[in-house]
Image 1: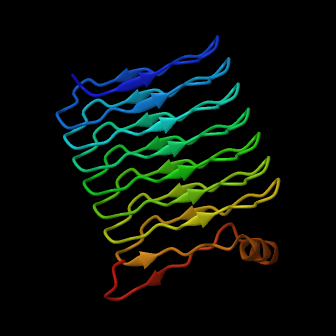
Image 2 (image 1 turned 90 degrees about the vertical axis):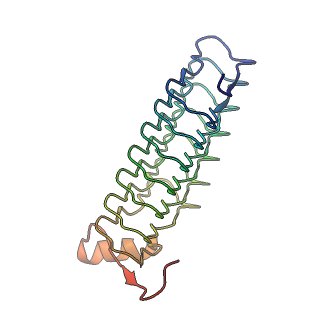
Length: 230
């Protein structure tokens, strides 16, 4: 009755193909397309829970083509999403052994919210992609775009906490392209930001210099734009 497409062509021994629960879906919902072509031994494909989704929701497209042994593809929980929400597109093409793709929790999101696009293309062994927590976001908020392209072994991408953001806030764009081994990108905490605030890109070099000089744990800068809601 509900649209779904599951392609299991090519999985090898030891793979677990996704469990998809469409209980309670209402008319107009599109259940995920899951492509497990080319999976190798030991891979675990995502568990996607869509219980209680309302009309007009689009559940994520997850492309795990080319995943190698030992990878864990994201758990996406869309419980209690309301009409008009778009759940994340997660692209894991080319992930190498040992990588963990993000956990995205969209519980309680309200109408009009857009959950992050996470691009993990080219991640190397040992990388941990960001945990993005969007619980309690209100209408009109845009959750961060996190680009981890080109991250090298041992890097930890930022934890972004957007709890309590109010209408009109834009959460930071964090660009980690070209980070070298052993780097830690800054922790960005936007809790309690008020309407119209933009949290800027935090320069890693500046952060490291200030951290060395003043032993700061993080830098928080908020620019209030009066009369301008981007």
